[in-house]
Length: 431
Ligand code: NAD
Image (cartoon, rainbow, N blue to C red; front, side, top):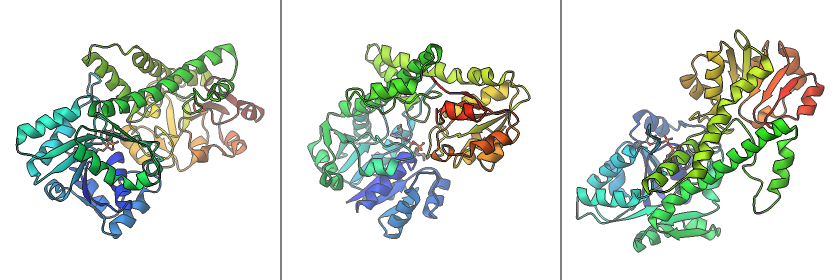
């Protein structure tokens, strides 16, 4: 089977490479010429563990190619995935202009029956809207419309794609569903569950799943803040809570508030979906507000530790919104660093992979070569992203390098007792 993937970002590139690995013939299309020429030269535009090897291997086998020529890609493909961005507009609702523009190009070049699949996270009703858009462009077009939301996590994207908890296929077109099942056959063989739904249910599932995960994060952050006042450790509470199988232990880790390209955008989008359908979104609204406050509370937390930060050097370890990615979209580090700079602090930062991306959004930061040179002479050190390599640093060496041994551990990666014994002043979240 031949497929086209339109949009070669985190989702499109992983989707294309993984289907090629399954033996499918894949053409990845993007309007960003620089991205495509880098990919065609075997250079990855993003950091994602295992991706480069997978892309290189499948390009060499001839099953994976990159182009800006959407016409050729559409003509050849039976299934066309839309994996373009759906960023939030000023009012929080998703901007569908990239989806629309890609759909118009598809309509223009269709030369027979096609299955058109939204893998982008799109608002409820987008599938039917696309059906109308294609029909309006040319009433004779023959196609099926499918919503196939993607649940991969950046940093673990390939494994998540290859071994998903479930594959959701939303459609009312029987032929399209059969083709999708065929395409996903390798996952069927490893007994990944398939959930076949209406278009709308599949579209809503993605927002509901992300909003639920965001709710767990905001919930535990709220409990952590209570722990700070009560004087107990949120990890004891989270551990005991999470052992209840109805609750589960995942996503009960407190932090500086969620970021990234999905949770902030998808919670806002779900709230705007509720509004569109005349319904309340009280829980999601609260999640958004709790997260806003959590993110705002980080700079005061650091100030409480350091005192007046003006003229002080603050070392920041971790910039990406989470470990194992270079994605800086909505990263908590941006608010924290900008907040500290506004108060007159000097920032020296280190991240294992996100410093190039970071320099584009945080130009006034001094970027260090490693953790130890970031810490040298610093008045305080702030952990913002919980990279594994930060978990076993030589903290004695860090202490001796710093001007004053103060740690704000916004991911709770160190045991406060251990660090206090070493002579650090330590603040975490909810401990
Ligand atoms: P991204 O911004 O990394 O990539 C989008 C790509 O689409 C860009 O390379 C852009 O140049 C390209 N593009 C835009 N318009 C185009 C057009 N008309 N034709 C061809 N290419 C075009 O975005 P992403 O993070 O991969 O997310 C894509 C979608 O998947 C979003 O809806 C997002 O919500 C959803 N999603 C993302 C993740 C994630 O972890 N990043 C997970 C699940 C779902």
